[in-house]
View (tube, rainbow, N blue to C red):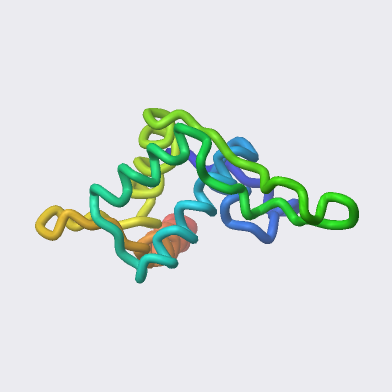
Length: 130
């Protein structure tokens, strides 16, 4: 996956840098929150249930702030194609080191590999310019 960013207009939200669309950002944030809410690690079945709920539009979009007359109205739901979730959200998050998959335990967990890889890339650049 390629990450393009403008150093002079760098957003405060990592998801705005990594993902191309607002909907992808929202889905990635929901996934991260879902993993955190489940002890920081979820199994394949739980991930599949999350993707199915997302596909069927049963997940509530908690990123929308409720103000004024909207308070008390039905919570907004979010729908995202299951296959596209795996292709455009989960797989890139795994390949960039944001989410780690343990083949033996068959679980997904939040990872700090992304940070280590960014440091490694920075060191590669420093080596290149010297």
